[in-house]
Length: 266
Image (tube, rainbow, N blue to C red; front, side, top):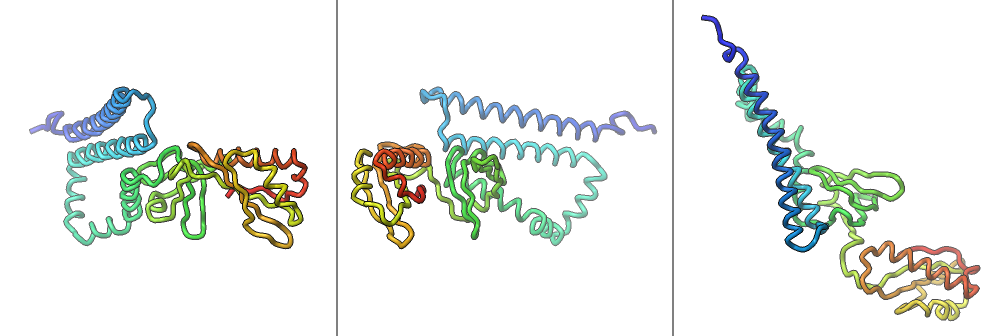
């Protein structure tokens, strides 16, 4: 008896439908989640997502997208008789399955779990200015994306640094965009050791809520700490630069800038 068209090509057709259907469904669900988030933002009288919401939403959208695609691929492979026979034999071996999970997927799974923890706990959010320490290496930049397994940092010098999510979950992370926004802004001024400290204090008195203290006095340099109040510094790094510029201008007008050896942010 001759095989019918469906007997010959039925399994590949079902597999193709499963793959195409999963892709269409993944994009549809992704669009649905985005529309729901936009409607929620409109109900809250805001058109801009908070950093927390953007971080969680982006991770959830990608996780759901990948999960739907994987389910579609699994259904497609299940329709292929030859593949089903091979996978059945391989998966019957517990030792082989353990090797797959233990060696091939260890790093990927660790980063996936770390990404989920980052989306929940959010030590760093999209748009935050952070410093990530991994061992002796430090990377400072703005978080532009938190993907399923990695995080992208814009260092501001033209480089885009990709950091594994496990580094953020287990390493030391300093979030310069979080914390008390009203905390004083502090910078460090390195001046010549023979500069008149009283004159420096007098010149910087024009900065509202400022205090000047000597941090260290060495033979070659006098390190002065300038602290100024901040009503609500949402971008503390920018506030530090603005304070540096203001301090430089006041020292220049007072004729004290010639004693300066360096100006650094704290």
